[in-house]
Image (cartoon, rainbow, N blue to C red; front, side, top):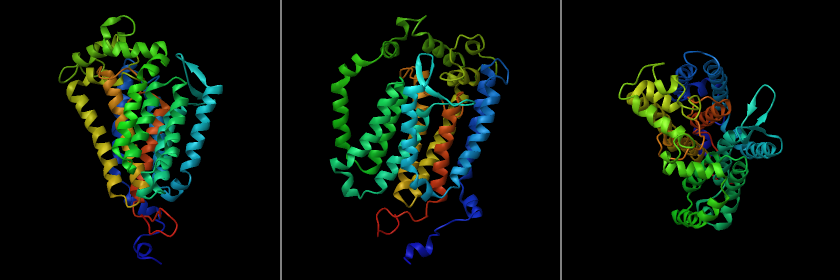
Length: 383
């Protein structure tokens, strides 16, 4: 028996896991969920249907799933990392074959009582698979070009499948979060600069292959007033909503842009604009502070974890959450093109909420099992 095995338990009982659970992170979920409930209640003009009550039910069920994942042995999570990722890839392929078409995009699988958007769960599965891959590499192996072929394939394949749906926002997030895990694993910065230069050189080709509506979104981002009643309508109404809220807001159900139906997609993409109009600058800052606290806790979990798999998994999922918030708020504020990325726990959407809660469950699992031995190579001491 090694010294590590004597001081680190191989298995934790349920009581030990519950005591080790990061209850501060758990508590943030219902708080953000309550904010989302109020936003969706207001979006429906002061009615619990059709969005708010479904949001509450999904949050309750998803929270139970999150806690179940949190209490699962991290070695079991490690063992099933690749199968989960493979299952997500198969689901993305199934979308291309038999996906449900909605609003010009084919992104969903109709499973009877539920409709699943596999691309949302794939973001979490990608971090999981990359964390397992790099856990098994020594630091000197990470720098070898041959060692990067597999992770680049893991990132590129789902990104290409998602682009075909088409879903540019999710494809960008997959590349961004995958690249972040590569950086955290020790890939040198010059390789990212080289990749960035290659992307810059390919921009004319990328632009030529974008769909018409995607080009329109980029042009509208650069000049929203070029088509104020068409492509620029969404973002201009969002500007008005953000500005009219002032410091303290107009009060619940008091926002003119949302309540008079000037603000489109107020229950999904532009939920933050509704919140900012009705709670003002103060409410918007408080919401962003809650997200920042959640991301900070996830990074703290990564820093204190004693195995490489957990460090990469928690940090990658923290970045994934931060990207959700940054992209959504950025597009609502006109700082980024509108790409259809939801605001976690606030925007209406079942798969996005499930994916966010699954990610938090994995972060909690890493924290609970941060001292559980997880060797990186046969014969190595636990890392």
